[in-house]
Image 1: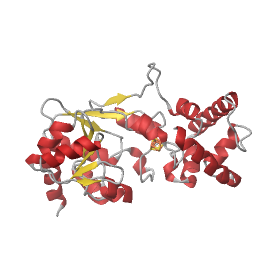
Image 2: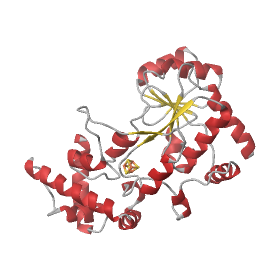
Image 3: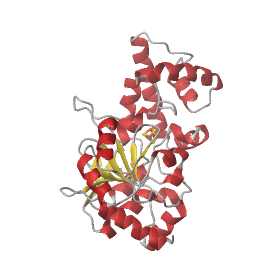
Image 4: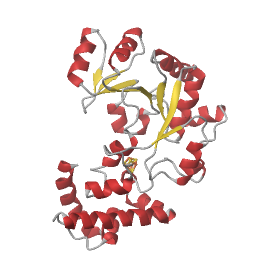
Length: 303
Ligand code: SF4
């Protein structure tokens, strides 16, 4: 399939699942894939709102770029009492920095928008094995028993993800009716570029005159949060040295986290101060790797 064909298919997909009574909720991170879906939604002529979830650890360049997009809405996450959720207060609340095995920040800060709306995302299967196994053209999460029962009643072809989500890979009228019927009670995502490669995304953006987030020009391959544990120790260290204010903010939060742990009589392992937590977190303290295992096992249960 040529890129031109893929563009037509993606436009068709967006038209097929467009909600009847409200605009799509377009999830915009400021990365290249979200630029591609933004342009595709314009080409499709569907109604959509562009939303960026503020993680509070986005790079300043990304925030500036996101704000330059016309009509973008920047959403902040809040606790029940109305206080804003930030990476810093989450670290204190959870009693642990975000780590690969306990990345609570994604669900708390990044994926909380668009409840009971049909979301457009820039998810692509090529990005990771996890995305290949867990995503498709449409992904529906929540109320698995009822959703499966309804899908079967309507004769919908679906796959189940290892995490219990439902994936639809056809944009026929039955799938559309099904999505329309269940999106108010589930988390429903339409992924129009699920089968695009990275090169195709760049070629598409170039064709439409979009240069993308300036961080790509500085050699970044992915646009994410500063200090994200998913990128590995080396990259974490490089990034936090590049953005010393964020490094200080993390260390400050680790200090408060330790105080809270002590107050509650919880173990502080081999961390004597905030810098020890930081060194363990970015992989500079090899002894810390062993206590990390203890910490994660205990903590994951309570997160
Ligand atoms: S730091 Fe990483 S794991 Fe946390 S919200 Fe950002 S992308 Fe998700």
